Image (cartoon, rainbow, N blue to C red; front, side):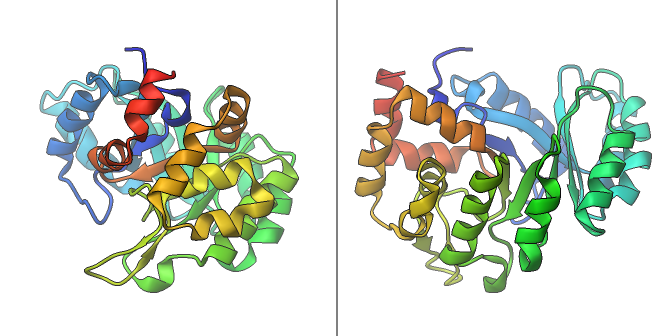
Length: 277
């Protein structure tokens, strides 16, 4: 499939089985294949699978579910201690392609990086989810390694959502150190907004994309709530700017693929990007 604009190519990692979507695995797998065969396939990243779900995935495989061509990123929320057994389990799933690992820094980041150096299969990239309360030191420890930073941008409580200032400090910190990053949770809408049901303050992925281009103005860009302002700014990005943005902000996990695309379409930005790809 071709034609998806570079700004969103591979941006939406499929986190359908994670909260708040919680799609059952037997439903999430065919849904992911449908995304990967749709016109927007190139916007869809790999299937995110928590290490705790590998037993269920193996059972589905044993009962006849075809995993051929399934590109999977393993997510280890319990840290590198989970990695060895998970990597061993994956090797038994024929057809599955391991394309990445995400691991929480439940131990010092330098120790996590050393464990990844020792355990990762050749060519498999990784992202380290850094603690929000000590982000600067964690980024210092990641600098100079081949690993991306991962930052949690939402969750099931108000406290799980970082403030504009906190997220801006992370983005600018990554830029200063030359680190790529991905985000996870709470970012499936394009524009910053207040959720009308929960009252939670959600960041917008379009805000983050633009902040990746101008990290020194990140706080201002993350605070912008006008979809028209953001869409206009995105439409004016040059190819060089887009390439730089995506080297920095590589992806985010979303339990819905449809919602981010619908938001871009509602802003008129999807059509514009497609016409000018």
